Image 1 (cartoon, rainbow, N blue to C red):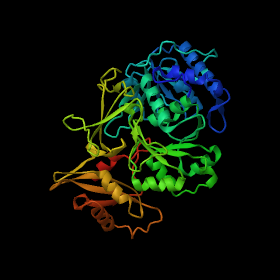
Image 2 (cartoon, one colour):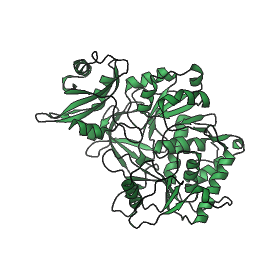
Image 3 (cartoon, helix red, strand yellow):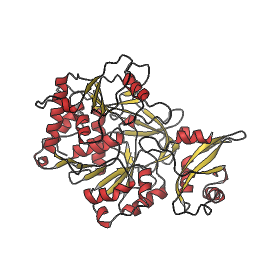
Image 4 (cartoon, rainbow, N blue to C red):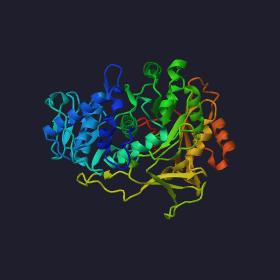
Length: 499
């Protein structure tokens, strides 16, 4: 990253222009998918051209633009080109129902749609005018960037996974995107020597903020592969020889039974993991399997993706790392007092320039509701003496058994240490006497004799590791745990099963 790119600019596209103008980037590969390759000058020209054609088509400053393209390099160009035109990019996940698609267009006031001819179109948008752009129909012309982009202008719109209800729109600013990218670069040592293998969705905050914006600002190369399939990973690693691969715990868990050659792994300097909790047992298994540090981070879409991250060469298993530069992460008690003693639990709260502009919800006519300067995450955590954060649970996930607060995460960690447990999740089950009791959903490893891993063994393991009150009232064996559209564990579905 060049010396001209600093947090003081606080304008994402201005930072990109400074970085991409550097002489040393002129022959460097920015993005490749194995068939098509763009150098940094070619990417910069493509983004500027898309932006100029967009402006010529009538896209206005601040317009919200849905992007419904298939996963490709063109999708990345469309996202960046939309931002460069001063509009707000909103990538849509595939296979949304017509009702959900129409709901999002209406709720978020999406007035443009970039799509190919096969993309689904909303059947109704409740009088919101939607103009459709097919990239192949854009007129040829020179590049043009919007000169009027301000740091707090909307740049990126995505939707939460909806684990607690219908997905809400999260509106992120240029200032927040840049703050997140600079924090990731500084904390992870991301540089021009890195090559990132991209297998996560392009409509997810991690897939865009940490795996598109940060690498391109740092001068890294992005190897854009197809959407994650565990069986594809040996071939992808052997072909691209990345230095970094990023995933969520379920992705790494599915990679454990698969063999990798020594040569395909030797270029990896780290694997990154975020977006969902990971047990210490799985963490150790992944590191042993891949032969590199697994760097766990923590964050959420409302704070532009990542707020804490383990240092790659100083990671601590069980921790989600230290706070990124430019952000503030504190712990607060239920009466809003700040926790200042290390080792003391509190609710994780985030402030700083990376905070979202606000939520887009039904009935607000596309106007974002402000977070009020602080995000109360609903997650519980504690800091150690060295500033490493440990997530201890979630306020809504806490199981209250006869007045005792139980952490599902602690029970899950105890279960994960039992040989034969491939995956597990613990939720609260209503109980007439105690109010709630723990119920554990467990997936056995494929090589486990089902008769050997029985309920009594698992219950005893938890009781011996923790105490009697933590032992699950019931074990339910599943073939696999339910997931949402971005590969996260769907606790809402499991709670419904428990009820």
